[in-house]
Image (cartoon, rainbow, N blue to C red; front, side):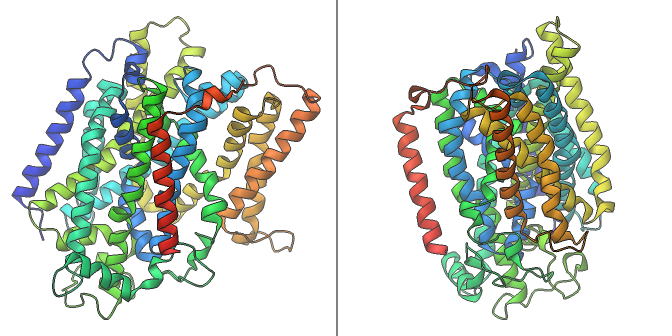
Length: 558
């Protein structure tokens, strides 16, 4: 099905609506750094919850997680469902401290708790991560999907898609800051959910001859029941490229192991995620936003994982839809099946009708643009508040800080636009870049967790912990990658590597802290009290409901 005139009109109307809303709510937000970077701390709970999900769901989820659904199945949904529980921990134990300290950025907490040297090191790290990995990957994957859906998949629209996405995000986020990003995210997340559900329901209606959505879901489950297993065993799922899925999702590690390291780092100490919670009207409002985000995370697999499983059934099961004329070789691997990451674009191109395709594409664009806008705003916030202001602009006016923020975000976007097309040439190397981001996350998580909850942690211990965590993580990579043939190097799944790196880093930090402080509390240790972590009825009831639903989901699909 071609991307017709009606689809173009719908997509164009969406783009005008988002830019219009962004510019409208941006009025007066450029007068102060708090207005530009934290939306004057005026965001209500529903805007926070929607913005958290819009910032999180990007092309990596729409495209990458659908591909994982194709290759692995529902087990990849652990990243989403366990994230819902992680959000509860963030809202209960992390946010009260962050908001009480009046933070603008996550690196600022490092300065409050430890010292300025480590803060600057981590600020530079996060800026590089946002620009060279996050922004470039989102633009690359998003442009690839748009080229597949709107064009022929031959790359003819690829560069134009990158430029279009970049300009779209810049059109409102550079001017309006976090306020523009957060308020447009409310519209974006509605489109995300509606567009995702449309794709899922239409795809399910094509699984069986009667065209029923429920019968389609039953048929998918009956044909590939192994794809609905949440806790994988060795050899249970062999992906199309011949890899045992257990190495990516090693059994109970998704519940009690390394997935917690990835989730706590991402949801608790990631600037472009946590920034909207720091912009809340109050702590209680922020915590209610966390609850909304938690509920939304529970339904995300329905729109990003299930479509991948459906595509798998249609192309591998003898009972699937096998009468389609698959003429586009760019969709297929050497065995005649869809390449994993083309699962979602293929479903949209083949089955979503005219008009609705424009709406679904708008949902995909919403996922990409909202994430790009969030990353730009967070990059600008860290650069301005953690690098420029303390080192170059101690006496800068508020308007000058906003100007620096806009210029730094523009520079970051230009660099990402230049680098994104190069990812085509990197092939699997870029997958390694993403994996090696996990080399530093356990150490950073150790620094934050001990800094938050153990008053004896010292600045020297934190610095040594961050530095030592890297060789520890690399030690665990030697075995799986076969760099050195020796029995002392163990072969462990990535999640186990992260968990062990985190534990060993914390042990090292504890030892250094005790030796240095001789058992005394550090002068910058955070005073904790029960009243600080007291939550309201809305948060408590919502938390109980989310926990209950997650338990039921794992019990049903164990």
